[in-house]
Length: 192
Ligand code: 5GP
Image (cartoon, rainbow, N blue to C red; front, side):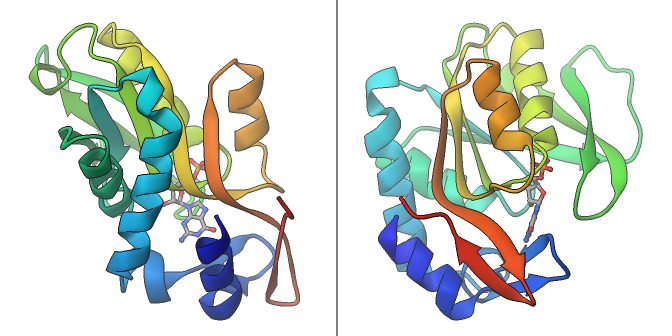
């Protein structure tokens, strides 16, 4: 998506050689116009799959999930909650997720009643890096017998394995921008 690519190049910073900081417009301060247009792109791409619910994980996936769900016809958004420990509970579906940015493992959980059986789910997140957050959400959908229409992310980091791993599993992945690499703090995008 051209507008997102321009915003990444204008405002984004590379931290070390693997963290993309886009706090200026995506996940601390939010450019709302851009966020809604990103949601529209995701909706146009996945409309034919007729998703019924958009699933994300708190907190930074929520804004993009909201705009995508709105553009898909005011679908509900369910965001998986993060907790430090596994809670034994018949009412929730849970999966363990290793966080690339925080270097910690957490459990994500969704109350079963918010994802009724056979709901067609579109997974949305701000970033795709190693794919662990997406895999955790796919696992929750599997437990709840909900088919996954696909995974849509704002930014895929092409130098990490998540995108390839999901595609190799046959999952339909849409990335609105792909960061190819970070060189001395400068972000290089993959050409479309
Ligand atoms: P994954 O599970 O694919 O390794 O990482 C995805 C999650 O980690 C996203 O939910 C995102 O919040 C966070 N994340 C991964 N890489 C980055 C990054 O370079 N910058 C930011 N801001 N978040 C990231």
